[in-house]
Image 1 (cartoon, rainbow, N blue to C red):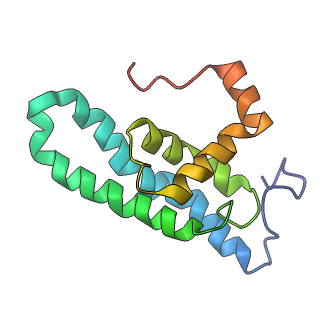
Image 2 (image 1 turned 180 degrees about the vertical axis):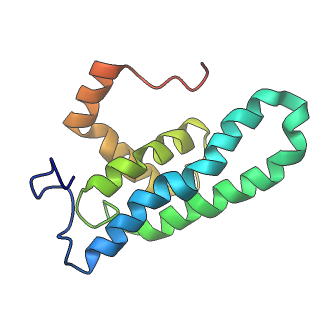
Length: 134
């Protein structure tokens, strides 16, 4: 974003919002994605993974509830669409694929909004749809 963003999709580095923005960038991969990836891997173990499932479910709920609360009634994580939404989008994609959005209406609406964006649709056309079963 610093090199190619042209001042778009990120708050100014000297603004108060910048710290929250950076937090979302790191939270996506450093925290929120871990239990979802564990679900993906452990889910393939069948019964052998069953003892791990309660802890994984708890951690997924913890992180998705955090994002749900952070979104509240806002359309985007930072109020306006930003690279934070792009970085966090895979968390939303995987949560949706795992059926974890039914009780999280703000998160579900956020996923629907970014999936409706023309750039998102072009990216899927270029790269293909996600395949979590592969």
